[in-house]
Length: 164
Image 1 (cartoon, rainbow, N blue to C red):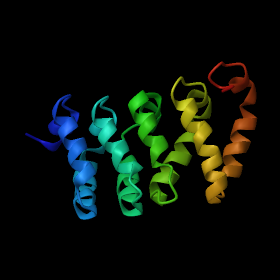
Image 2: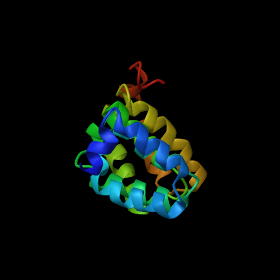
Image 3: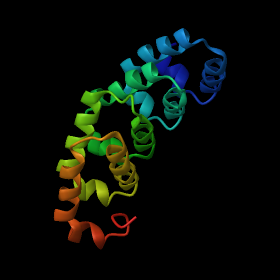
Image 4: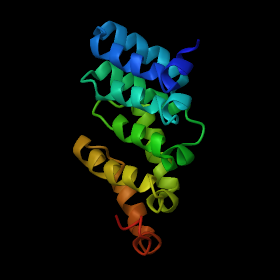
């Protein structure tokens, strides 16, 4: 049985989640490294996403960096952010330990797709969380993001999702 099958199976995922509660930090780092080889299928699975989110909920900067690096393997971030499981994982990746390359990919994706993401039923919540996160962490690209939003305000302000 593959790790993906264990984590995305409705029954066996509970065993994995319980084992995570008693695993050592070294074992959890190992799980994060192994799991991130399959970041996309785990993060977009309605069942597997819980294990990825549990890893991100651990107060462990090394694990947060490893998991957030998985965003680089996502073939299409716009689709990923538009899916409920994917957007939950992406939001959880917004930690001070986020991999800088992953943050750059997220920022570039949002900047070039602000209307679709801002008006998306799920992605709009990511955009709402991204802006204060960038401000709190001192990312200089926040100015570009705000300018992009203001440039497209008429396309965002009259959409129920864009005004959330």
